[in-house]
Length: 299
Image 1 (cartoon, one colour):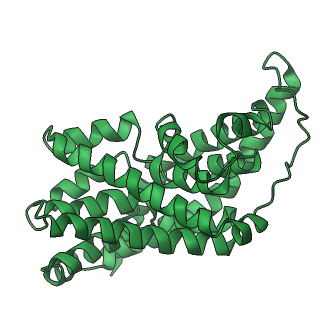
Image 2 (cartoon, helix red, strand yellow; image 1 turned 60 degrees about the vertical axis):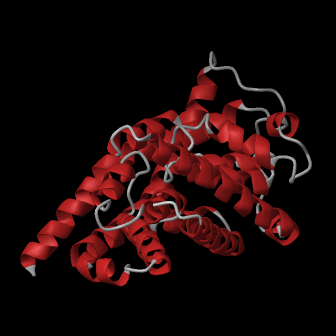
């Protein structure tokens, strides 16, 4: 028992040391968005129609090379700046995957096999559009629960980085975001380390003998292991001998979207109603897409 607890402690510390730099990066990026970007920026670059904003959001998400944990405060700031909530949901799904860092790690982990990379990017983009579409359908009750007011008065003109006051606001907001996210992140990392230590994966491998059950098992593993999207491809590749490619893609697409850590942070940054819709639509979207690959005979 003591050895197991020591092992859990090592996993917990490894998650903390691996992910906290990304949390800090996300907090800094969030504060830069909040302080420097004018309030009408995203209303100008994204269509006012939430439906028409979905496709540009998928393309713009590739410009955010941030993991699934650090993207949450960033998107919260963007939504408060005027981004449609549906477009924000698209960013939450697509941004952790559709970026060069994750693409490179995926390609390298699977022996430079482009099929895995292409399918991962394609499924993530489609899943993002599905989740965004569901949020669009329910946008009125969901957007009513999202505060649009800013915590600081920035006016309509962008701040200048040449002024000390601007840097003071950036530092203040970064500190606040970092410690707020850190509290939820530490809780999620603790739960993830306990699951990784005491969960018997051999049982899950036996259960996952059928396509539908294998897909569910890999989605559960992705959720419980709570890996960074820049490193999860290496873990997925280690299951290659026991699971088919579609099941591995369930791990690679669902993990960056939802895991223990970012569920805790989503609950801290967004209303429960939005989080519930996001989790339900994202889970169903990934399961249906992966089962579609099984049906097409992709192995």
